[in-house]
Length: 547
Image (tube, rainbow, N blue to C red; front, top):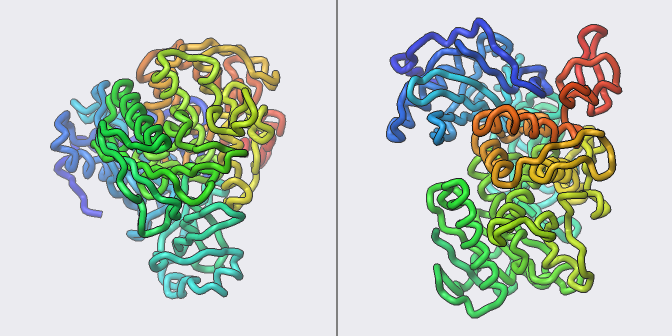
């Protein structure tokens, strides 16, 4: 990696690094959130035109930092800049993607947080994958699995798109890093579409990871897909309306107006200019497939089915559905949470949270429908029900609301059949934490005795938005979400809100409770299984941690 020594204003020596409160270690037993008063400096500039210099100096800083302290770099690790952003607090945040031997490491990325005016680095967070004797050339000479019979042996189906590429994959569940072939597969499974990046170990041909791209958007345009598939070359379809035009179709009008309202919510609440914060056009297509019971953010646009009239009415008629799916677009451009396992559950939860918040913004207040997801389109023949219930998640008969009882807590390969390892079901944990942070109160099923002091939706949404744009990374898990939202609360509001944020996560079993110590997060010290929210305390006596 090219060095930019002239921009490194001080040596990046790290005599002391303080771990942030909450979960501090990844599955690889490495820090995920560290702070220090003497990290060092990156290039100082408050001018957005200097983003390239700031980014390169942050890369220099990281490449020095990981050779020191607790990161255990072994050589061959490097970084490239993904995004440089400035905020209203005078801070600059540099998102990076990690490389090993020049190859991308999927799920491994670090963020450098610094004072923009002085360049003083204040914190670093994310996931780092050390090059622990990772082989390259012998495995790289192995041809990737690509033909149908090879994929079937691996339990995979679908059609390949493009040609496999060689990368590394950091497994956030085991902490291992694998040299892999990244293969893109598209198709249908149990009547549901999929478009997955699948990661196959280059040595033993095992499937070590799956990253679904199909997430079950002020310039805005709405099209009629005329019952074509979302994969059809006809997409996005026939243009019906643009800007303030009338669409002449009730479903298209609802999708069109909803996209406009969601844009207004993000712009007026956070100053965000569309999904990418750079004015991208929001494209919607209605009448996708025939009687399709779904809506999705896919290929940088919104798609809506008409519903079958029994399970769903037209999906475009649900405003919180629109806000939910468009927030998947925001996530793609910010934290890029992988849509599987715990990171996928956070991806889904953030979409529910901001779908509900956008609905409250449109309505001018929180009302009986705010905490119901999809209530306007789900089972139109049944009054008063909803697809999900943020205030009491288990009412839907599937979702969980307490981290120790989460779905697919062990190792799990994401598929449509298992909801990508529970991304919708486990979203209830963060949904309930957000609800309690807004409204206050305690766990609806009494799983903890914690009583949360509510802070209101205008404060809570700012905390969760800053966590999304500033601290969450692609592989973040629930404990990382707690650390991210607590830090965001500290940045914006101070200790009382930080305490409420921690209390809300405590109430749903993510991390310990202030003073009560009901359970500890993954990575925390423990002496018995009962000490851990996960129910698993592992390691040698005297050096055990929650797993």
